[in-house]
Amino acid sequence: MSFGAIIIGDELLSGKRSDQHFAKIAELLAARGLRLSWVEYLGDDAARIAATLRRSLAAGDVVFSFGGIGNTPDDQTRQAAAAALGVDLVLHADAEREIRGRFGDQTNAVRLLLGTFPRGVDIIPNPFNRIPGFRVRDHHFVPGFPQMAHPMVEWALDTFYGDLFHRQPSVEKAFLLTGANCYESALLDLMEEIVGDFPTLRLFSLPSIADDGQRRHLELGVEGEAALVDEAMGRIRQEVERRGISWRWRP
Image (cartoon, rainbow, N blue to C red; front, side):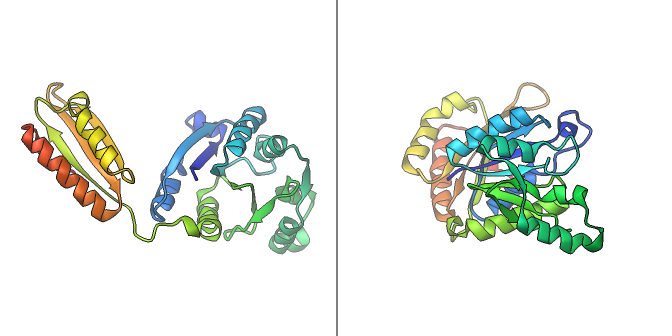
């Protein structure tokens, strides 16, 4: 099962605001032994959002969608989700209950728009102000405000995907390699060997060039179960030393 994120808002694409969701969803997944497979940034364009949701619904991924579920004209996510699902928008009974509980006698038609969701969805409780999000077919739609969205994502992960959490936390270790043979193509055979012998680990290599434009650096490491990570790193260390490549642990 793959996890993805859709982060929505014209203000993000224009640079008026900085995204605060990507790093957080990656952090929340990593804490549970899971990882993010993909992320897409979209503007407030109902047609484009609907097309993206059709693809992700067909793929069967677990998706967290941030933003665009308010009641102003630029909020298009609810409408796009309904179009992707082929249903209409209706006032959700549980959402109405939460909204009336929040606003009491000040509840009105404009505020109830906040609980108008695609037909057939379930709500996601909002511990911040009781204005819920919604979920359907492993797609979870939450507000753009981090104070609301991130606790709602945590609730969804713990409520619906606890059986996927690793019993042991994933660890990541890496070497910083330097030297004449410190480039990816020269170490491709070693990387392929590690991937073949440790299929449950995630291998990564991140090349860089020093400020002087001459010295090469390569960050080479693996992520996964601690014991296997240590074994794989021992193999990598032995081979890079044999090839005369200098190494040190990545901080």
